[in-house]
Length: 377
Image (cartoon, rainbow, N blue to C red):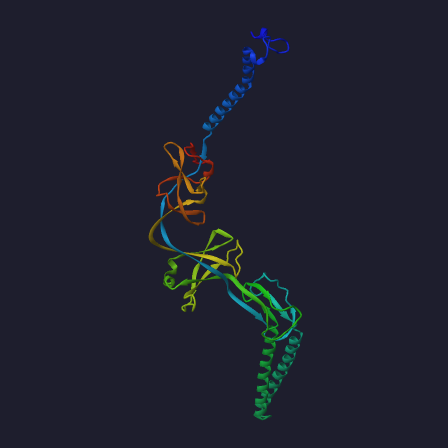
């Protein structure tokens, strides 16, 4: 309808484009078409997103919070020790011929640990053996002669004494020969070699240090206010918690305690026994946390939540998400938390018990979000 107002070059027949109101209207309509198309497209996308968000209902795990009775519990830092530590040595001197054990290896009870060159001791035993056999023959002859009154009794007495001395010398030679070998008195952990092979060692010179780790000892220091509990040690739950595996707790049993307090700290040493676990490495010298729980309540209650259920808001405040079973929606609840223990943390304020909270994935939720409670696969 506006074709007659413009020529083939797009110029208004009436003059300038600004002076042609019909032509200006045409330009406004043409320019508004792309904007309307974009607006319509965004509106359609927004409706689709809202519809998708409305249809997607997240499945969450829910835990009902309960107030539990608090047991009297204390924690101490302990140190692992071997049941016994022995420096092994020879009772005779000589050249060290065999010391092939490796540090960190376990030698079974009766196994060879070290040996001296035994040639000289074997020769000494043979010599005393020959002297003993000669003395035995001599005393036999003189007994026969004395029975026939052929020799005086004093000669028989001398033969009897020489025979006894040769028997003692033979016993000493046999014992010295046995002293050239060191065997494990128990299943021995070789902790350190104290000398090198092929060296000359003196009697009672330490050669190797071994430890009995079939049972380990853990020493802790307790204040004088708690030392009275050792009389009821069988009623206490005592557990060892190692830093590398905090989820695994090993049971301990009372072994002994010192009755003299430390002069500076005024604490008493208590020794606990731990059976060496086969599935984890526990060595003397390691540090360990010892948790002692009494079966008697201290009269208080505690609310704990799983660590995975803790969330934070935009300001960094701690919160949990409360699940409403009636509307199947979640809402945030600010809380104050205390110290964490294992996989749970104590709640100091914000929960009273009986609430149902989302136990994981709180960072994916928002206030009023509709969710589905997880009931199983």
